[in-house]
Length: 301
Ligand SMILES: Cc1cc2nc3c(=O)[nH]c(=O)nc-3n(C[C@H](O)[C@H](O)[C@H](O)COP(=O)(O)OP(=O)(O)OC[C@H]3O[C@@H](n4cnc5c(N)ncnc54)[C@H](O)[C@@H]3O)c2cc1C
Image (tube, rainbow, N blue to C red; front, side, top):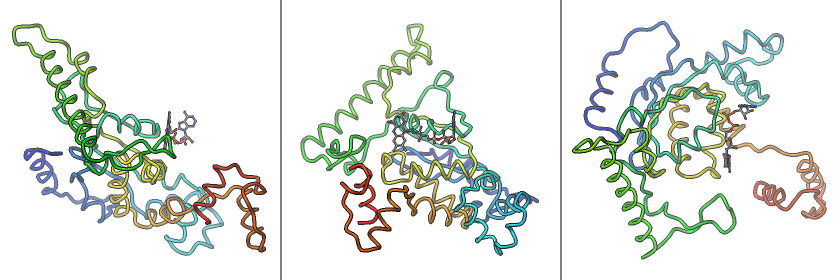
């Protein structure tokens, strides 16, 4: 279970004492504040705090913008303009702080996003919970044969059962050893900072993670993408759902230009022009590599 009854009660208590504020408030985000959105088998994301809304992006842009503003008549148009032209700093005026509970191997991918502030649960100071990520059967897939960084068909039958059994058994055994090493019952007990090194990568950790909207969009672009590993993608998707409610105009622009859009190389533009002129273009005379061509065809057919 991601949260204990006590933790749920704490969250509800925090939500039951609203205070008036002069700060910008996003009604959509207020509905999410403090609440846990469950992810994987024991994980969650919770919005702990946020700053700004769609209007904050527009306000910041207009301060630094100058003559161009006259041609952008409304907030939505301006936000779309900023997104389209990679004018990123106005989006940095909005911030979000999340509490995330996630498996260590997901945290390892996540922490590569350096443009954030992180404070992680200390396994030197505290004893970890006996909680491991065990994939749902439909996520237990074989190595992909076409993508070295991906998975293929779902494992079936005896192999699936054997793998699940190994995952559960090994994690349980490692945690038993962890507890035995820590124990001070008739022995000194190994330090927590050392005992933890025997635990598997599917052990859950927790952190507070704070970033601004520009860098969050960058994170979501990479991690909510179909090519991202499923286990981090579901976290990105849960965050994206909150962001959509927080800054609906900015999120719509992000969905359109970043998630739904593609970047064209000069070679790709040249091929498209030749095709529009009726020419049949092949990979060999496109100037693109096989990989580039495959990706190009994936978008344009
Ligand atoms: C599908 C996928 C596969 C991946 N595979 C691997 C892999 O096999 N091995 C691996 O090691 N990593 C891998 N990564 C991680 C990837 O290389 C990036 O480290 C990660 O996505 C973070 O991106 P970022 O550096 O752009 O983000 P951030 O660290 O948040 O940085 C955001 C932007 O800030 C700028 N920036 C931040 N810090 C610096 C700096 N010190 N110097 C210059 N510019 C900076 C850059 O413009 C950067 O794009 C993978 C990522 C994805 C999405």
